[in-house]
Image (cartoon, rainbow, N blue to C red; front, side, top):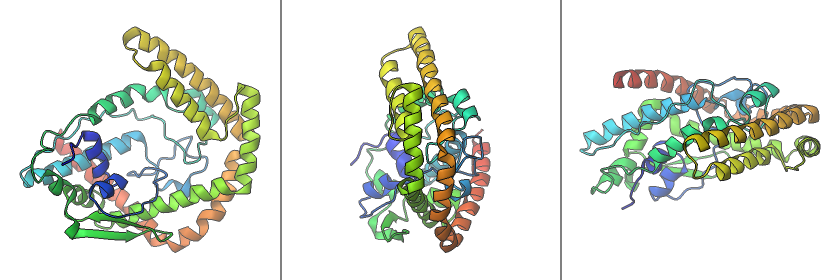
Length: 327
């Protein structure tokens, strides 16, 4: 029997690919390009270009609230089956926490204020990692796994855009909680939208307009920063790697001082990145390619997109009620 930690259980509860894999179901899932949320986030960085009109954007705070509500509903279901499920006390990000863009696009204002959001989230990420590594106390009890993820006898399959499939067990507490939080049609809407977003992002990044703009952006960054990056994601990844290496093993004053230095370097690169994106026409190239890529899917999957939006609103209402009852 797997020794479930809070991290593995949270992945199960979110009905992402790990749920399908651990449940033992054959599947071929699409990557979720942007996490789902209760309401679209239209902050500065997201106003640039975002697939499907920011339908699936959410702030880190929204994401955490949804996860807390979902864990609470899982705990209620598990308790009814005579199992204990501890709801992890997740750190709640600040209201203005950085919201990533599907294409790595940055506005100048966001870059100067938050960089890529990496340094600002270090402490929350560290606490989240500690919580995620904690074992669920009842995870080794016989029947715990079946109660949580369900049984293959109740397996349901969803066909995704492109023809691949995902499969989940309908009688697990994770699935039941998701149904209460989002609605009974959420699974289909979620995986369909995730697949569409992945396909849209792939289409944009494969377009000639995007590739030409990225080449110009890369040359601009090289001249301004002294390092060449293949794309905006690579620039952000370099900051994340630096932060991880330079902050490892530090604490107290040493950690705080080093974090200041890391953050200054992050802001410097992000500001150059954002300036070069604007100069190279990266947002315009993304918008042009995205329009051509997503228009057919928006029409074909209009019903699924509508269900997704309504389920987000439903989840926001349920979350408010569930979390208020916990206070």
